[in-house]
Image 1 (cartoon, rainbow, N blue to C red):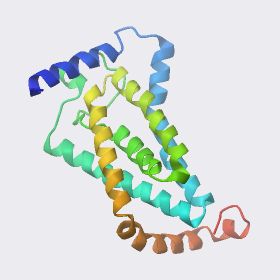
Image 2 (cartoon, helix red, strand yellow):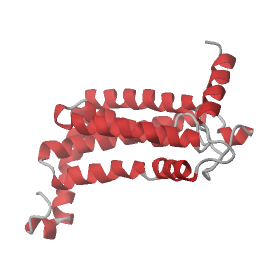
Image 3 (cartoon, helix red, strand yellow):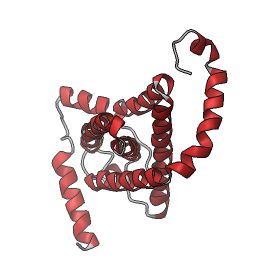
Image 4 (tube, one colour):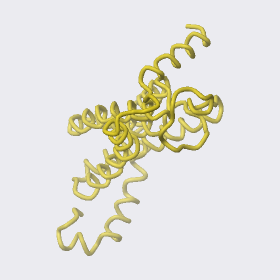
Length: 203
């Protein structure tokens, strides 16, 4: 599809999803919640898995965290090399969420959300959590379009970057996680020693 046609489709889909000038207060508040707060379930989940999980689970948490860093780095690089304006920067639709006027493509929020989710999906023991995090990305994606800070194709770009990053980190886990895990485990045992002795955190 030619670039002009793709951009026209992107704008049309955005206008279908974006809030009107006078949105429902319930929808607006729900969108704010999804757009800004759902993302915190990712670090909370990774931290809980690390503090309360077995050694194998911790390695998978570390792999997912590295995947998120790789994906976000790729997202920022894409935004720097191929900047794309956000809807409010070109006067399209309505905007209800304060945001810096930087590149919209791909969405950093969804890149982090889905890279972690896809990393979990690649491991049987974490698949149900991966599915849950993947599905939670959908209302987050809707909300960020609804509030006027992203286009639909920003979300597609985030999904692609996340999937490629998860596949890369899964394939290179032996070399990525192997050297990091012993050092982080040592820090963990020293940092959380009082709580480990009480049994609140696993050694």
